[in-house]
Length: 160
Ligand SMILES: [Zn+2]
Image (cartoon, rainbow, N blue to C red; front, side, top):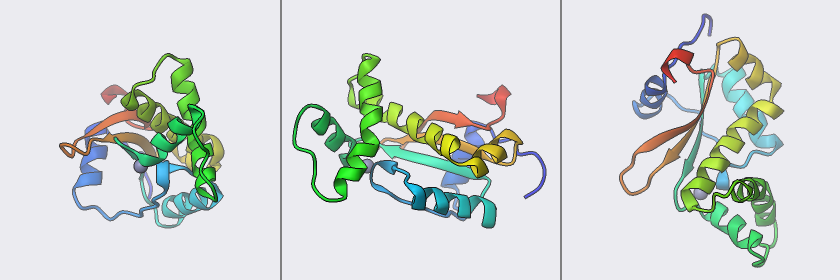
């Protein structure tokens, strides 16, 4: 891909919804360990994906499990524990800010996940910085299939 990408939030949603080719990396609670980061970097740097979407959804079981663990419930066994531990910082940050509604925690976790990708991946951060890549966080509502933009990096500034 060459040239400067000027995506508006609407463009980003349209790209996601209109049958463009997608390279999907799916994890519980959209947590991102090293294999996930590597897979996303593969999609971007090898396949040339111009848009990374962190797609969270309401009634997320991984977030519910992290909330339960934060409330002193049992911590899951096995590698589910790893998922819960990666979601936990978002739960704690949301609650520390006085947000304990499910949607507020979800949005915090989407923003946190998007920020973490840029913090940990130089490949992604450089491309966002020089205008070759947009990275957005969307909150998907199961009831009506709508999605709300809750995090945006590298989108056309005038449009956000
Ligand atoms: Zn989920």
